[in-house]
Image (cartoon, rainbow, N blue to C red; front, side, top):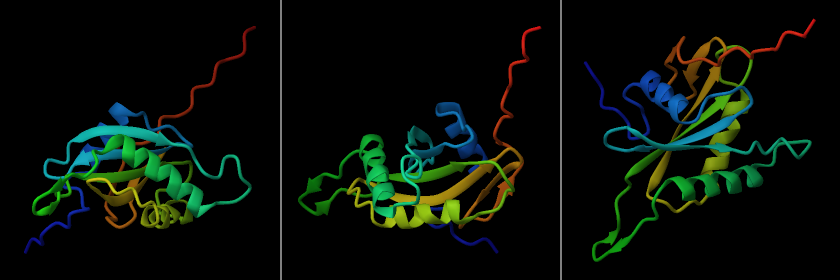
Length: 162
């Protein structure tokens, strides 16, 4: 028996993650937010979110929420008022955490759910799952599916000149 898919669930997360990688390369240390058409799940845009831990010694959920709000407003159209109320939700926002380590969800991924909760982006989008991509593959935090591709590319080091 097949169950119906939740609005935040991806039909084919591997394909979506590959499409995100094509638009905004998944590089270790990046947090990427992608906007997908809700019905088709086609990636319509992606942007790197500055990591809130960079300039600060610890995670600030309010700063993270503000950063997500800025990215959401840039990627997704504002809702429009109609005689029947607000326009419908048209997009899904997916967060991708690119890091070293094992392909398991950690606090590094879970904290983005709280940041989305308080982002108050007021766009025509809902926030979806948070995915982790490592050199070994990917997995979704709520989705819990995973795979080997896409994965982070190994860092290329230049050989010293002799």
